[in-house]
Length: 108
Image 1 (cartoon, helix red, strand yellow):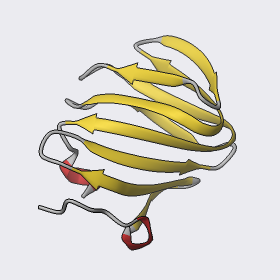
Image 2 (image 1 turned 180 degrees about the vertical axis):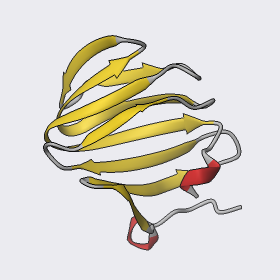
Image 3 (image 1 turned 135 degrees about the horizontal axis):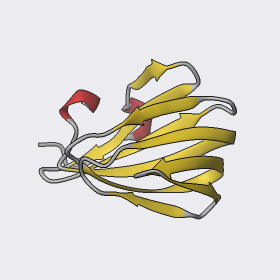
Image 4 (image 1 turned 90 degrees about the horizontal axis):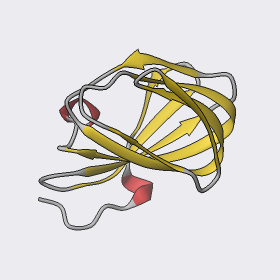
């Protein structure tokens, strides 16, 4: 298992238009993902069995969690319980850092 993850070595995935994803680090029980989100991009409603917490390093987005809408900006954080539907509408170019537990196999 890796103990050190170099940002310059992280591969970038482009799962949908306006969304870039990099795995920053991964352990046995959690992983950290950086999302670069372009203004106007949308992450459609979805859910997964992973707990997800995150914060906005910069930018602004509207996140809907379990049917409740919230507008968040730089420094704001969020928590998504497992199996709760959530979606995002990007209002400004944004960098979001998310932690998933357990790690998402589909992001490796």
